[in-house]
Length: 291
Ligand code: GUN
Image (cartoon, rainbow, N blue to C red):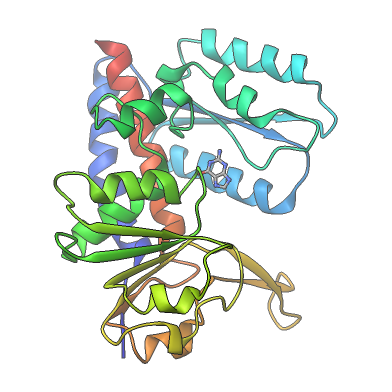
């Protein structure tokens, strides 16, 4: 039976360490501030955004949400980002994705000043991270997964990490981080056009799944003793639960737990780590602004 990798508990330990860093910055007259831009009324995005700003406040940081209407124009969104770029009390800016289809999300992400791009999605930060420059803001989910593996003493050197998914937010930066000196993993990326996915996933010492499809990974698709990191966040109807739905990942958790060595649950695995790394990036940005 697999060991559960408890992202909530790892986050609790990390956030306690970070509260001290925030207190040290406050003693120097700086309160790290994060502004989250939310466009429209997607309920999942609203829930993620409020957990991000609430997490800021529990550490003594400033977290604010700028809520813009679904039909906001590109110009008005750019103007709002310009104001945050110019505001010295804002150290981190995050535009919650996905954006409504009429907005050019790549241009929007490029509009955030790279020094405040705590998501790490601006091409300057993506490029710095790709060449291994420590000044880069590293995207929060990949950074959280690496931190989780490190704190759980799960070695990556010489291991075969198979990633399912090829997103800008998770898979591409994660592959680059894992193959770098230090982690030293051998990385395979698979995606929707990979034939015979199971022939790849069965080779994984560490399997990372970031697709957004419930039960994509079943027990017959993994090798005994694998470590499974489930990045999926899927809502399933559940009339018995208080909200009428519950969250599940991309992995058939109960069946894969019978075969794996360790596995992250959903919720309570990768999700809290992502928010923790967002707070860490905002603290890093506040520190850099002091220099
Ligand atoms: N939507 C889902 N994950 C993320 C993330 O890490 N950052 C932003 N900005 N939007 C997201």
